[in-house]
Length: 174
Image 1 (cartoon, rainbow, N blue to C red):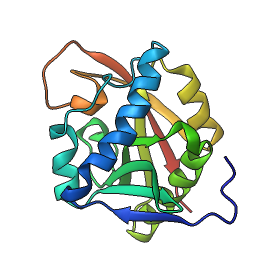
Image 2 (image 1 turned 180 degrees about the vertical axis):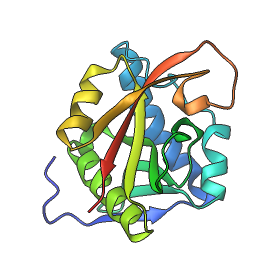
Image 3 (image 1 turned 60 degrees about the vertical axis):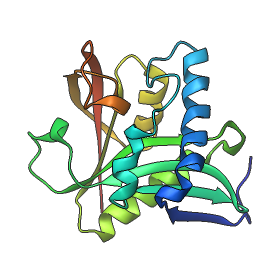
Image 4 (image 1 turned 90 degrees about the horizontal axis):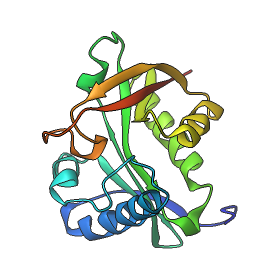
């Protein structure tokens, strides 16, 4: 889907729009699950996104008024406790299958937003076994900064579960 000329808007999500965020996340999660990619659970629990929405960290991207993508951008991540510079952290970036190419625009928006907030880096992580996603991030200029074990999938880090290896990525901002 080409986006040139389309009306693409980034909107900070309020809790009354959580269903739209969950629809985008669940569509992406089901697509990953169908391909046996263990990035996320097959379906999102609203509790996994409510806190970020309440803090004003979750965004919905609409194309011509239709929800097409979502991401959370916040300013702290214990997974990066060893890193000493300020950064923005991208979480739960997802697009609808009909919005191919929107992810790149969303990453550019997140980098710009982080830079405007005074951050020197944009950081994210993904399940280490997702080689296709890792290659994508590297093609977008992100540098692999090592792997880490987390107790649960990235969408459920506060819950207990078997450890999962994630790859950390960082983009230096101009």
